[in-house]
Length: 428
Image 1 (spheres, rainbow, N blue to C red):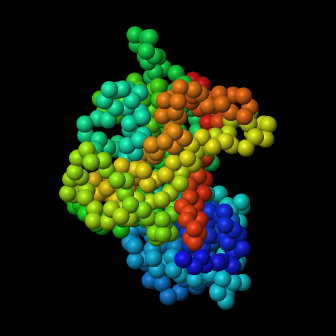
Image 2: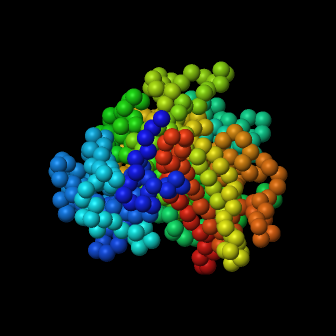
Image 3: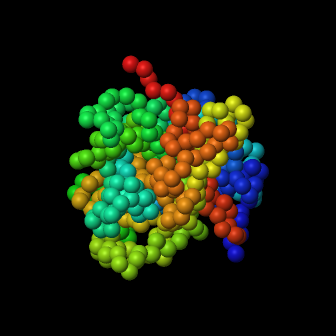
């Protein structure tokens, strides 16, 4: 059984804490004097610039110390796994219960409630995949009941290029978008606010070291290029999407906003929760060699994913958010390593800070759907404690994603929250 290390930061030792000593996720926060890189520990943020300026990172390579002084994580991301690991070990030592210089380090802690979280990196590019076969099947059944999966689904990880400029940090309000919408009984479309606003529960992978243009990333090396994971809400206007997506795929129905959680969880923190990749059916085609992994027994991640909803009326009546679904990342048909390798397989150059998302994560069972569109198969709307009902999101609704990995004998590794509240459309 593993030994769970304790921190002198008392809040980090609570069993329900998202950020124990074994997590140590990275983020960017603003407090006094601009943006800084920080590491979450309990309900506090360790100021890495302060650590560097106070000589608390002595002994680390100079490029690592220099990267900790910057205002975003791209520099650290570019240094690679060896640098990430040595910094992680150093911070673990600083926050361990055995640390003797607690008084000096304590001055470098900022309460999370006093800090404003920012985007953790300068995101140059964003790609969204379609890696959940359960999601693809449910959506396909709505569109093509006799043949829900397209012929290429089990051969190639499907994705589209998203909009990096509209990625926002958790807590940012989301304006209901407008666009062309064509109802089934209309001869032509009309322009107006979406009436079918949806969320999509996803996991994001931040690229660390990239690859040069024209070079590929072998599947065995793919995870060495991943700096860490976060939560992603790829907000979607379903009525706009159904009209515009052919023949080139998602456009205005997706690019108006994508919310990410502020903390990037290192893959090292998730090592105890690796699990076999999803077992393919005997009828599934063989995976092409460039996507075939020799480590399928640990290519998955046992990560519980939850969706909560709170309406404006629920907030007024002090009703807490209700859980809409619970799924798990291990159910993906395509692993995160396969997504990255496929992305670079044509020589596409990935760069530090690029974001790759899994697409909606759903499981096979009822209650594990990753979006409201999928819940249509239940043939009934969602009933809220206030008596309200939902088939899609209403103005004032707040959507919250949470995620965590846990098993007996090991600490709970949480992701924090990814949240957003829907605002009424802008009137023109």
